[in-house]
Amino acid sequence: MSRWPAPGRCKRRLAAGIGAVAAARIQARLTQHTLAVAQEVTRPVNAELVLAVEGLGPRAAARWGRELGADRVRLQGPGGLGLRLQRQLRHSFLEGAQAVALIGTDLPRLDRTALATALVALTEHPLVLGPAIDGGYWLLGLGAGQPSAPLLVGIPWGTEQVWALTCVAAAALGLTPLALGSQQDLDRLEDLAPWLR
Image 1 (cartoon, helix red, strand yellow):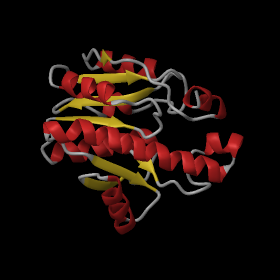
Image 2 (cartoon, one colour):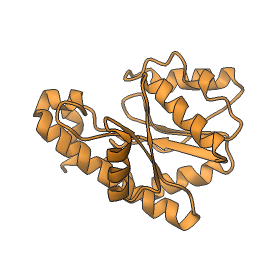
Image 3 (cartoon, one colour):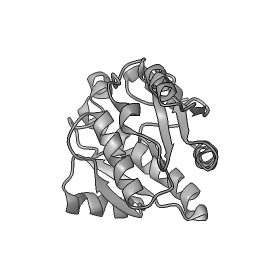
């Protein structure tokens, strides 16, 4: 899932520290990185790589997706993050997916091993979560037939409670998430420091 990297329309918290143009450049670079890693992992196992776009119309989104090497492009649609996540899961399962892994494009240290581990884990576990250091998660993986709506409703997105409350919601559904290794996402100026080392 990614936003079109236009100044003022992406990475607003980061832009507050470094400016809108620089933040948009970082968003573009992170999106390219994420799609390159995802291609390395999905191609050998014949998994479909879908880019869910916010901030562009259908034709421009499709063109951007082709440039980035996505197999397909979908618009994220309106609403908060929870609703947009649910929409991507629902569409994928309606189209016959047996498992879906959703990731954002703000992970400078995402590598092939981390993503491949997540895809393998999804073959054996109905719910896979990759914790982010800020209290959220960098990956949400769900198997077909698992309820996504109750899992994602009422989560205060963008807070340090996202991981914990998602785990509470999962437990209420009888699901125990398999936790992957942690990742640092890039949202604020201070998050840039490890990336620049």
